[in-house]
Image 1 (spheres, rainbow, N blue to C red):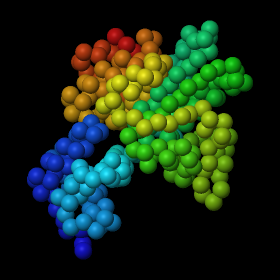
Image 2 (image 1 turned 180 degrees about the vertical axis):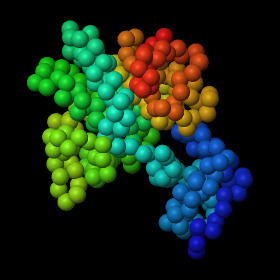
Image 3 (image 1 turned 180 degrees about the horizontal axis):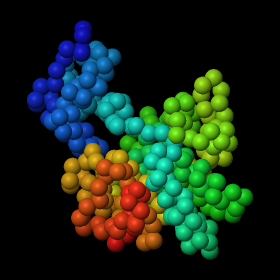
Image 4 (image 1 turned 45 degrees about the vertical axis):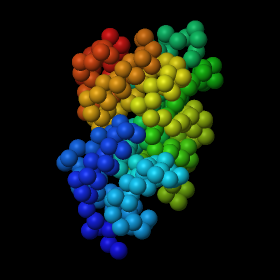
Length: 280
């Protein structure tokens, strides 16, 4: 059976992207039909399925639909990531936002950072390294909480493992790589101290109730995910992020995650490269 020849019918494409949108908030556009088809053809072959109709049944019926959705999402999600991505934005975090927060939180010595849609963990670990480097010997006096969340349990398992290939470290300064990673046979294992600063959890950004249970955050990174949502989904996500951001907190988004006019008001930071916002 050559599943590469199997095509998505109009009905199957509509059904499949409706399932994806309902469960994740991600909206596949008409132009992305071929990409979706190509990414899932291999999965049909692995499961020995004849067509996408059978695959949709697997996603919607029976005891393994949740597990299969996780497997599917790991294959179709845009999970491009790496340590120290968007250096200009991270500079704003480490040189402007973080020092201000450490000063403002000096009495409580508590700092809370949420990395939403963190994929395989490079982003929250990067933030942990920046916090560790800034606080130094003072770290033990602080309660630093960094949470990484994602919709892909497969990605979260990789994050928890904290072992990476050299490509993930492409943007890491060699001195930092030497300080925070141990290399063995081409695999780079993160320092246990940095690993201990970050916890991971499954979270769907559509689930505002679960987000509320965590309280408010001093900093939220939610980069390169809302550009996959439709207008309603993006507005809903922004309302949730606004609700969870501390009154003096900062939201960092991706370059294409434009924060426009919604009922969740944000004010941009002065630095245009930061893609960062405070509460309006």
